[in-house]
Every structure is written in C-alpha cells, then in structure tokens.
Length: 199
Image (cartoon, rainbow, N blue to C red; front, side):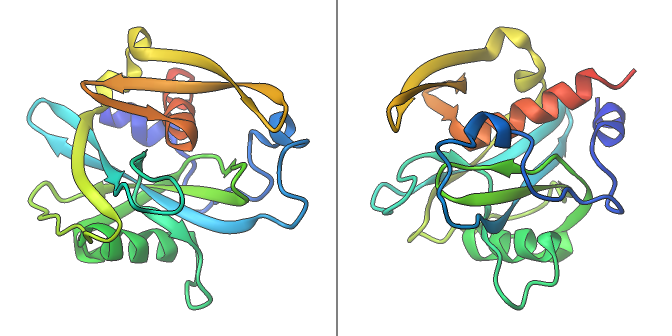
C-alpha cells in the first residue's frame, strides 16, 4: 500500500497552487477577502500491521475548530520559506515532533476552506519511534488511524448540512468514538481518490 501511496501523491517538485481543488463548489460561500496560506502534515507512520495516519484532537476551549480531529498544521508565517516549512514548524509546535523525525515525500492537491484558508497538505513519513509531546493549549490527544481504514469504502459517509443559507455535502469517517469530518476528512478522501487512480 505504501508504494501505491508514494505514486499517488504530487512530487515535491510540483507543489499545488491556488485555488484549491474544491474552489468551484465553495466559490459562493468563501470569504470575499483573499484566502490565507496554510499547510498541514499528512504524517504516515509505518507500523508492522501497515501504514497509519497521524491525527490530533483539538482541545475543547479553542475559539476555532474546538474538539475537532485534524492534521497538525496551521497558517503560514512570514519566515516560512514554503509549505513544507509551515507544516514542519506547526507539527513541532503542536505535537512536539521535530523535523529530524519527518521526511516529506509529496503533496496532495490544495484545499480551500470556508474559514478562509488555502491549505497545502504535505505528505511525509514519520519515524515510528517518535514521541509526541502535545501542546496542551491546542492539542488534547495525538493518535493514529490505519490508512487501510480510510481506503475501505465501507467507512466513508456523507452528510448534508446547511452553511450560510445553502446545503453542503460533507465527508465523514467514524473511527471508534471519533468523528473525522470537514477539511480533514476531505483531504483524506482526496488521498484515497488519488490512490485509487494509481494503476
């Protein structure tokens, strides 16, 4: 499966450019101001039973995305030279995993969010010996989900919700008692679709 994953992602020489792959679907509900650049780390951990995806659960007291499941990541800062730098910095700040334990090897297509970001997903291997030290101000838990779980179509769900006066279909994955939805689920579905396209 990992070979398929490596062939499915965009190479490091081809980072995605705005707008996001979902821009057309969101064009009428995106903020009128330019979207801010952000990046997340889609971290792959090689385990004996197969590759797993590293995820976090946000703390409940945050102003935005409280309690939600997400990838480590956030807004680009002025000193970040590129999306990889943003993803590595945010991963270190949020979960305490340093760049020495992370090997980026590709990108997923960029994603626009209704919260006003254009997000670049950076796909990387994480050393299985990593020790997470989550920032308690932002991260309540760090956990892994087998990549095979997301690849299995039986685990994919769609839900319709209303946002700014119009219906939207959102993606969900229910893993145990955790509901992975929104932008994180959309990026995971993008990864799955790219893997399915690899022959």
